[in-house]
Image 1 (cartoon, helix red, strand yellow):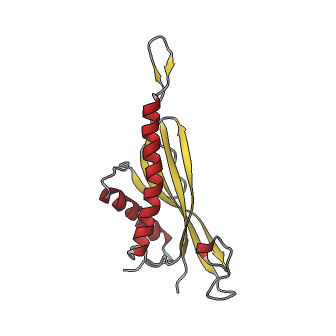
Image 2 (cartoon, helix red, strand yellow; image 1 turned 45 degrees about the vertical axis):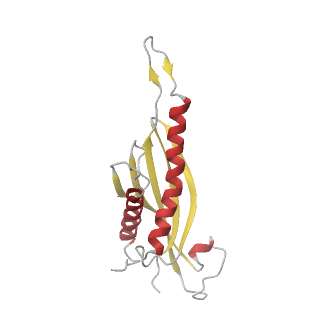
Image 3 (cartoon, helix red, strand yellow; image 1 turned 180 degrees about the vertical axis):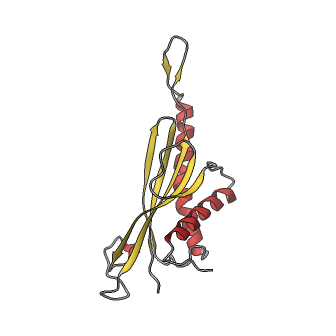
Length: 171
């Protein structure tokens, strides 16, 4: 059943399902806490969330960063949704040794966390692109990716968020 552009929650769910499925297909673990959020998720160690950041009527094409006129014609408002996929993972924290002295995580532990984070950023884009090509995001005929923005590291967590711009207009 095609996704209804009047139900942006369903598209958020489809995006989340696509990301989860792609990670599982690649044999890469994701945090167990996975959900569609009403807004940016509270930074917590180990989560995957999708939320609708904004919805904007526009008279331009959603995939061209608002630079080209809408191919449907002047005066035809396109509702554009900006979704964000966030993945937060635990990262090595400083530890207290005897005597109250803080000890930083090793360089190797920090690099291991960085390697996972970098792979997450590529895997999210590939997952959503593949889902769109496969028709799993039907109704999402216009799709553009924004930046991957790093979250943290702080408080024992690190992650990132990718922005997706999609058309939410029938036709």
